[in-house]
Amino acid sequence: MPEILRAPLVVEFPFTRSLGPVQSAFLTGLRERVVLGVRTTDGRTLVPPVEYDPVTAEELRDLVEVAPTGTVTTWAWNHEPRRGQPLGTPFAWVLVRLDGADTALLHALDAPGPDAVRTGMRVRVRWAAERSGAITDIACFEPYDGEADRPAGHGRAFPDAVTGIVAPARLDYTYSPGRAQSDYIHALSERRTVGERCPSCRKVYVPPRGACPTCGIATAEQVEVGPRGTVTTFCIVNIKAAHTANLDIEVPYVYAHIALDGADLALHARIGGISYDQVRMGLRVEPVWTEGARYPDHYRPTGEPDADYETYKELL
Image 1 (cartoon, helix red, strand yellow):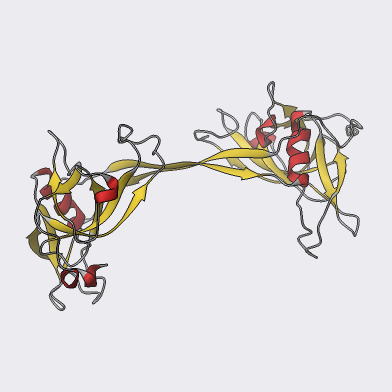
Image 2 (cartoon, one colour):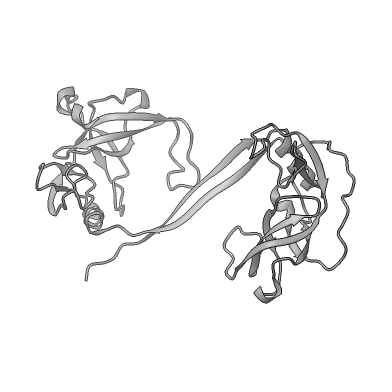
């Protein structure tokens, strides 16, 4: 039985956004242990606050403080918390309508088990010990049997207002290639590049996809291409990547689409061995392998004359 390939992959980037006056006040308030909502023209109080009325689209600016106590309107039990979630032990996701609010806020409820959670139960904010102006300043909610708390009566203006946030976005997943791409990866480990030919249009696709993207027909005929190829298009990268295996690559550098000899689809790879401002369309290149690598580290110029535009124009 052929080896089934699997690889853990991560897509991660910091999402940076500036805050308008409503969101700035809300997050700054959380830092000061104050929960703010916004009042609509028809008298509803929305928590968390929004900048525009979701019904009328009117701009909203009338901030109002609500209590840190409230009522669970619905919930779901999380039996296995994941990385980055509010609590490290099993907890409930709850929608809580805080006292004084007309909408519900989503957060975690620290409870001993699902039997301890119910719709209509009373809860209270548990504040984080250290707060910075983020939704995580509310560490979680906790069950509460006392009377409804009153708003603290703080003013709506706070010093050192939070004006922007950086939220990390991350997706962890496991990728398992199909038959065609597995063959392609195994060939690369032997320093060969293979594609598959469509039985109808006769085009050779690299990397192979198991089916022709033009004709929709399954492909099985394997064709070895390259190793040399032609730069069709390229871009100059001026921002250094983080959390990658290529931290040692200095910017600027070039990523290019390369049409390998014998292929009818260009693949992308980094260009090295030449100054970034010398890379051009039509440049002839070849792969450079490092010891033990399963794929080329980069492509470098071969020294051949540039390819004529007519030979690769259909691959742009």
